Image: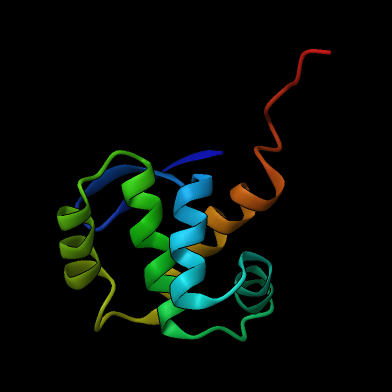
Length: 104
């Protein structure tokens, strides 16, 4: 599921594809565990930064640019600024878009 949100300097598209979920899992563990940690506010900084970084790539941002954005707008910033975005990305990935209608 796709999410569009402001991050750092402009609006970006965020999406965790199956391949990118596997990449995220290599750094942070199973997607369910990452989600549980983030939703319960018992997360590590890497959970937040990597969720945003790989979702930027999934949304069409070049990998190098995604890494630069994390360095500029996530590292060294108050955690709440990036926590909320990571939680929304994971929520959309796990549960879909609550406003989306399905045919059938």
